[in-house]
Image 1 (cartoon, rainbow, N blue to C red):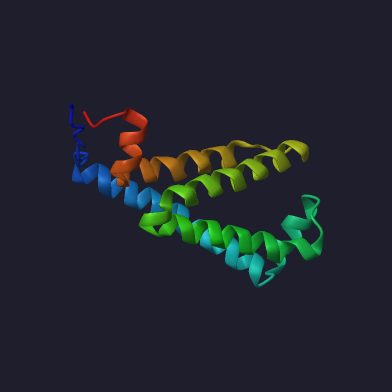
Image 2 (image 1 turned 135 degrees about the vertical axis):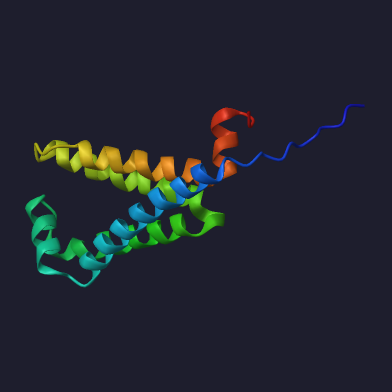
Length: 134
């Protein structure tokens, strides 16, 4: 009978870990700022959201969804599901930008940064992507 061995993922360098933390931290700060501005109905945020075709009453729910996704991303145990939800949120943002004929590079770049930060700071994600640590 064969026994399965579970390999513990090796740690990345401290530089990679801190780079991931910094990238994630910057993304988190921006997302929290955006969510809070929507929740408190800051005039620029409401105006920008309504110009993209959303009703005025949709601004707070959009902010709450973004806040929940970001909080999930912040918590290490739920960071992967948070990243998945943020990817969905940013995918919606990309679709809205395409419909409005606005540049899509920001939302796509932001989605990549969310995952890059998580990849660099979470060995589970690296193991999932690489199959095993090298």
